[in-house]
Image 1: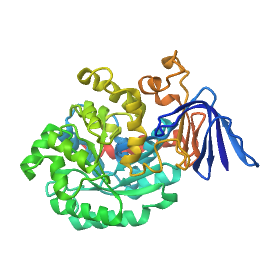
Image 2: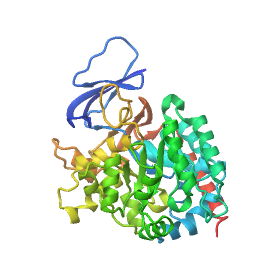
Image 3: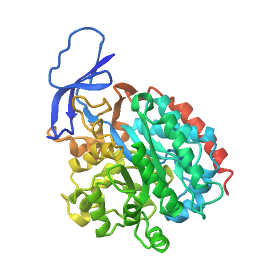
Length: 442
């Protein structure tokens, strides 16, 4: 059934970055059919959703996520990256079974939808990734994701896999899931990072990604200790090593890139590789602050992501927008990261991270109707200049301000209530499985 959103302030994110007051959005067959004022349609069967006084946004997009880790929220504080992985996260991930993975994914997508996110690029653990796709399928979320690939000799036993097994399972998942649910679910190869993957695996991933036409999603240059270990292992910096292996290009999304040399920044620009900025995670793990303004100024496409719940504690992309807007100002000045730049990272930048910039990221005719509606009338956003909704969206808005969320034109959140997931059941299941899984790890 067609849907008409009426009388909202529409932040289009189109080429002209138009913001239309008292405007309508017509949705037909899951796509945006018209955007403008006083839209009139003929015929019956049209649902109308009055969004007077609210802001209509393109659905927000996470460019880096770990749905498999959400059960471990609040259980891995006070550690730097490599210790955090070895002492907490890898043992927790190794203890997962299919049921706990489904509970973790359900909790993830419930939180993301409630906070206005409509799509994400996700990296799983080594096993049970079908459960993540099944969760996204059932709740209507848009997911590009893949199992973590970990074949290096010193990977812990519970997660270690052979090169052949890692590639075979990745290809099997690709065949089962890529392009399903009307192309809402898509596969991405996910070699975890340099220290967990052999050169043979990564070269083959580079080849297969081009052959199959799917994305690569991995980590790069997050932590100084990691970088030193990569140099000792390969004789190269992270991005330079990836480039040598064929793992750069517009089909590649690299999470973090906190410590990238000038040469690597040039490589990112020249190859049009996408970078995902995860400010909350980088701060909590004491990893550092990525040179995002410089990357953007150089023409590198940068998106936003929360990373995993254990290294962030929440998955609220409004918080990531606020952090991204504020974090860099002491170094580059108060105008270095204006709200419009940050909002672009969370919309069009996220779409590029998924390889879906022709389909998502803006409210324009022909694009998929992934839309978030936000109420900025709360005390924490009041008073606001009616001529500028971008500032309160980036600096003041919260996940609790999200009122409606549509994915492919279908409501998944209406009047702040989840429609495709039961919040109480999701939370109860998450608590039970978290206690069961984490009690195995001492």
